[in-house]
Amino acid sequence: MSLQRRLQLYLFLLHALFFALALVLMHDRPFVVVGIEIGLIVSFFVGNLVLKKALLPLGFVRQFQDLLHDENYAARIKLSSNPEANELATLFNRMLDALYQERLRLGEQRGFLDQLLEATPGAVIVFDFDGKVSLCNAFSSELFGSKIQLGKRLDVSTFGSVSRFIDDLQLIAVGHSEVLSNEEGRRFRCQRSEFVDRGFRREFLLIDEITEELASSEKATYEKLVRVLAHEVNNTVAATGSVLESLLFYREQLRDEDSQDFSTAIVAVQKRNTNLAKFIERFTQVVKMPDLQLEPCDLSDMLDTVLVLYRQRCQDSGIALEWGCRDALPLQMLDRHLVEQALMNIVKNAIEAVEAAQKNADAGPHFVRIDLRSAIDSVPAYLSICDSGNGLKNISTSQLFTPFFTTKKGGQGIGLMFVREVFNRHGFVHRLRLNSEGQTQFDILLEVS
Image (cartoon, rainbow, N blue to C red; front, side, top):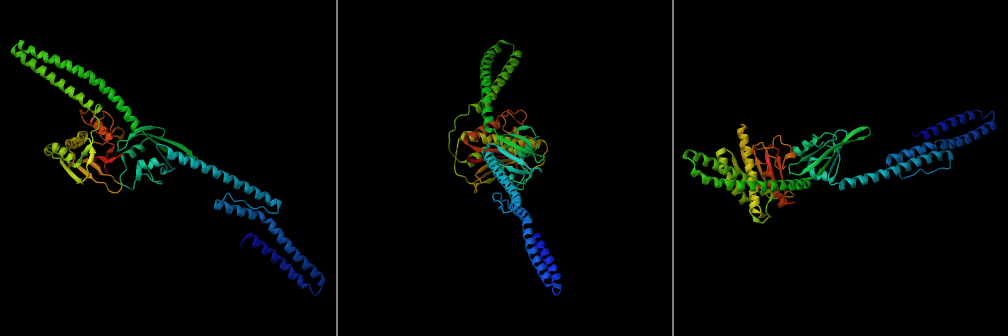
């Protein structure tokens, strides 16, 4: 029962009591009793009217409460004939109008923020007080896929293992930025910052892709470097080779015991000269890569050719070089020479990684497996070359596909440069990663990006 009903009931009972007492005196003073009863009736109606006016502000409060509960800030409280109560209603209406204007302002700001986030070319990820993702834009979803979900931590995935790229993101300190690479070879400038929300600090990540910028800058740098080196080395090699060839004519003038040593030294220097020329030629192959000559190619047959080259080596080393899945794919438009050379580089790197694992007495099995899968639903056809070596162990993603970076002793770091250049020219997305079983896997999506 409402307060108004309770007060009306109290007023009615009080007047009914006095009315009943007046009836007791009815026989002694009838006229006085009639006057008292008329007075009680008038008092009851006047009291009820005063009660309604007194409780009118309470009605305004109830209406205001209902509007706040429904978040209906556009509605207004209707004024009454009571000027004193209207002051309270006017105050409530001003508060509703202020809330309505604030909602419009916040809505406009949120709309602008949403548009700004969606138009941002990089990924923006905002975390809540517990480190869970509370806001992300479209580029974040495209970059991380199912690994990013609102209300969940970025480093906790229900869809499989967390990538090395995400692990590296967690290591960035607040206020610092780093350049990282993901498994696809894409490179990003990643920065972690924070802001204060309701007195608590919240962190957010800004991830800008700089793959093309860095690739273009790196390519221009190492092309200039290689051209200068090749020019100087080739001139030196040519002149030195000519001089060494001329020096061999003097061996007949030497004593027999000196002639042999002289010839051996000259031949050794010539061989080193030739090796130097071949060494610099490997770098110039990346810089002077010819234009693509596309033709229909059977990728499966091309891989068979590559496997034949390394089968004996793998048998001698106890490495299983085998097919995993081998789906029939339509002919691919490829530059046969360049793609075959790139595949040879990948398989060779995989075999060398397994051989290194064997030397470190890592437990078997030791294998290099090739999978060629056709397109299924939204997943394009792809080629993967997987090995049991641990070539990516303790390697930061920022170093993958970096020019001249290598994990092999005596390597020059141009193999992956060449592979990346070949597949980039074909428009194939490719990635080098550790799969869910901890094996090194090179994936090539056979769909032009």
